[in-house]
Image 1 (cartoon, rainbow, N blue to C red):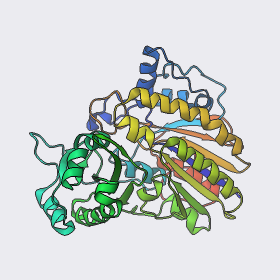
Image 2 (cartoon, rainbow, N blue to C red; image 1 turned 135 degrees about the horizontal axis):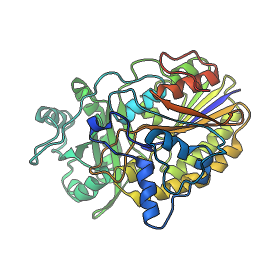
Image 3 (cartoon, rainbow, N blue to C red; image 1 turned 30 degrees about the horizontal axis):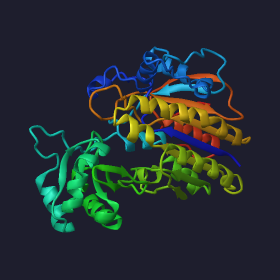
Image 4 (cartoon, rainbow, N blue to C red; image 1 turned 45 degrees about the horizontal axis):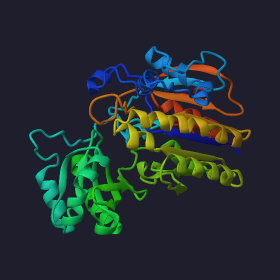
Length: 404
């Protein structure tokens, strides 16, 4: 039985793509700038396990620079490279779908960054959402960082019963509400109404963002739910599942693919809980999945807790914590296993604003049968899906090349 693992570090970019300037992201480099910040603050970003897999060399291939503090220049144990996105955006869905072999060659709809305190959402949309849901109105109606707007408007929300409505640089409408004061089921019902209403605007996702707490001290919970448009074509996940294999989605992966091609979903709150869940799934799939297994985990904290919040120190600490745990994963790998560490876009915490950044992503393939080699820079994330699909014996995808 062959197994494949996608360990996606959400937003872990390694250098601006040639078209980054069109997105306002010229010079972005999530890893490179975090490493520079760490070196400048006397706390070198030492990632020995990721370095052995070729992370520093992948960043050099993408950006022409070696990240500060990453000293290894040879003797790598993985097949390393970088990839630039073919899809037209820099959003979560496009990145994930392209990794799975389906590039997004169309333009999503977006809600604009408003000026002079004007609302971001069309008034006819919010009016219809209020009328169909029965809520007393909305707060926010703007571009915002989720954690910031919840703490800023949480008290007013609890007192008024008005949900918090906001968006970002992604094709998304997000609704935040207190799990107790507003109700989780009520929030999900509201998002289901919103998902139907945004269809004419070609919006990719509506996200339920529940939170708890009181008096300006609020935290989001693991009960997030993404209502997403399904991929427009069969992905790697569909190929594996339709061939009798098991596809396990950890974290928000199942929602991003609208549960299409998913055998089982596993939820957990935060990077370390997701890593624990990943190790448990490794044990479970070793005992089953006679036709192979694909395990796809999204480590969301890099993006939602540090990238969007422009928390450079937090991002650096999260990378150190993840690197320290990688040996646990590697020790559980068996003959016939292939894993890749990658990302879906960048979110450079040193850049202005709070949006994603258009960057190369790492491709670090490793496993018992992987010979160390340089893979170069792929012109599409699809090469990742095609490589994993070939390893699992799945029918070829429409896009991408097998790198191994």
